[in-house]
Length: 269
Ligand code: BEZ
Image (tube, rainbow, N blue to C red):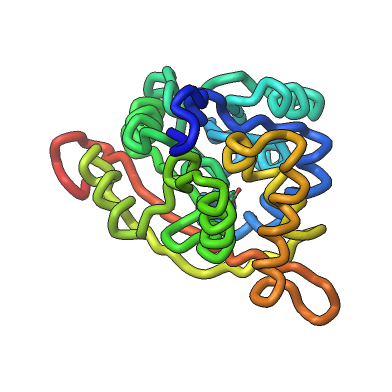
């Protein structure tokens, strides 16, 4: 926990919150840039698909519009409300506590799995949710994701006596590490790769941090947060902001496709 205040609450006990309006203003790119992972899913009309971490339902709607029967889950009640507004079957469920049993042709997830404190619990849930022969296709932040942003945060937190490790909510795996977790659960991994995807931001680094980096702000008193964000932003300006004032975040993506074998116990079948 925080190094200066032993009474500080557990940052992980207070999950990141999602305000749908702020999300649309600062994070629409998350779904806009995700069509390649939808292509990797190869959804077929009539298939039953579980969308894990549906956010405001933008991608779920695309799957539904293709003729799939989609159940969407998200831990954020506000996001689920937004998704329901699109006419979707959206439910408030934590991705680490999926309780579906052998009913889906595919489990799909975008920009969610790097938020897992227990990645294996999410993988287990996906496994259980799938029919034999079903596929698990996902994309999330991977090893090295937002390394420059994390480094600037680390410095600004350290100046105030805090360790970034105590407030980091993200798990950024390598392709090999994630494949090993999938295989340990019994999946046959067809691909699991990390690649850089520099990501243009709609506003600036401070707005991005307000949307995605709530955990890092928690140890900072509310009255000091603006100055904290400005400090992190100025540190990042030389590397992430171009001469026209356009910000680009140093994202990487982990993208994978894995299959639950049709005949369990016979690897690769
Ligand atoms: C994402 O939603 O893809 C993301 C969020 C936080 C850090 C990096 C990526």
